[in-house]
Image: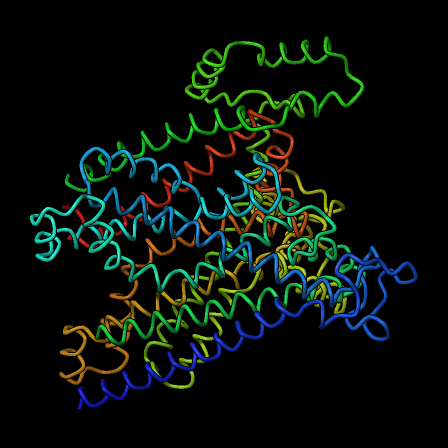
Length: 283
Length: 336
């Protein structure tokens, strides 16, 4: 009886996981279309000013109205996807590479290198990630390259720990031992045998992390620490429109936040689905 | 006795971390571009003015001497003098911590209760429609930008419905609330100021709701996962197989076992919510710690940056320490 219900639950879990992955993928596919075809989907440029319309309500020449500067909200929301998704994905990729490398060396070498690297990570992880990003971004200044670096920096320690833990269990396995004793070089063993087998948890975390990275980026921009105006970016748009909200004008800040939410949700659904699937296979 | 040794060992581990934080902030804030003196003097100041101001704040002295002064001050509780305001950083900070703590603590308390109730309910109905609804809702909560959510709540609660006050501060100044702790609700209660208490509550409603929605999501997920594990455990299955009543199963076996993990979880979420609070404070002009620290960062106010970064780190690691200790008390296996 208990077993039968366990089987039924596992089946339901797998179906739920598949639907999460499907919905997440569809959302991300739609976002990808927006990123690729943004200029075709909007009749105004993202930084083009309509001198006759400042804070025009939705409808007419402007599908979602215009902001304080007379720029088309719909066009800016679409074009912003390029920057937001681009920076987030680049930052997570950088964090994965840098973090995995540190985790790989620390976990495989052990000894003093491990101790030093882990103590450095301790200092970084003595802060909530958003606070660390905020502090470094405020001191470093905004701009695309700096934002990628900052978001990668705050996310890398988690990957380093994850990979290190995997590596420490893998390095003792017989096939690694065999490769070592048969005379493969240090980096050869790491690259061929240890690295590929230690990235499993990273694959599950990375999509979720892309969503967080987008939230971090938008949060920094909202506080004025992101890309300079008038570049189209969701957090900066919400910030510009925050004054309008008190006056009841919703269209300058609600649409960019909604797009951001949907986009992050796409990554979250995909990540959650992958995690659920990994869990149910393990059981 | 063993628990005491555990606490002491963990405290000792904090020393190098905090030392690293102190050194790193001190160096980073000075190495990276930006000059606090130029921001207070304005564009028309001469070199001589700048040099005089620099000397007044001790910034003309060698780096190692400045560092020794700073660390020496820390031991006597002296955080230095704000370059922007000229006031002692310690007392400025004390004014700002109360309002922020008020926000975070209330939000966390509400979120914990919600997460436990919904998480356990969701786990008991695992795989069914209600469970899936709760999980998707949690995913949405996990994906929502808190600063935007705050604005949407302002739009609906203030601009459209007019039920809540405008997002411009904490308590109506007409209520003449006298300052004790900085946490308005507490101050109003302590001074028996009824109108101020109501006003503080009204102002708290939207920012707290924003924070609750954001932080309940990760808590809920973990409570659910933890409850699922308990449900699958041998102890629970045995108890259920013996035909114990539902109420007893729920209270004695499920809830208690699930809550063992809650302290560690609450600590994690607490840290996460400090980040969200900076954004929420900004939306609601809360004038709390986050806004103060952000201003310090933007103007390169060295003593303010050093103090706020150190306090956040200290807070964060101590909260984790407390969570670990509570966990160790609840679960003796950790103590080895």
